[in-house]
Image (cartoon, rainbow, N blue to C red):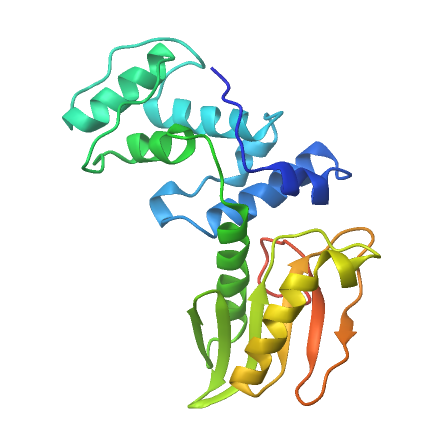
Length: 232
């Protein structure tokens, strides 16, 4: 059972030109930055995967300690977890419970397969926040309503907003709403503001937006699982 995930249209629009392994590594980096430690997936699964869904199936199968796509009896640790695992193994729709499952593998199944949809905007925002935090361990990094603030003590020295959208040559029209929103935020915080977008083959250099006062800049943001590649 390889599920068809939704929410990936923009992801493939941006990264469709990459080799499959590079594209899967990019996705996994975004995913891992947006989930708890127990739900992160090691990069070793990319080697034998052909799709996003395949990565999750391989990881779940390893956690269940079963051979791929074979049915087996689940050990009962948690009734909710067992019901979710059983449904997954039987290829059925996952049951809905008010409480969260206790087992890590059941949590992963629920995260990946409950609605088979990924919020790429959320994942990208979490990635940008996580990377800025790691690159500036002696600064204060806050995020509220999608606005990331980098502070030196009480002083805000930079604002960042992440947008998971494709930047092309017609950005002034295609990103009009995002630019207007960022301009207002720039005026509100009274300091430079960077609009972080996924880097792509047609967007490799920053673009300054003309305005009075603080700088507003579109920044190509590379997805990388290393902390110290180029970036802020």
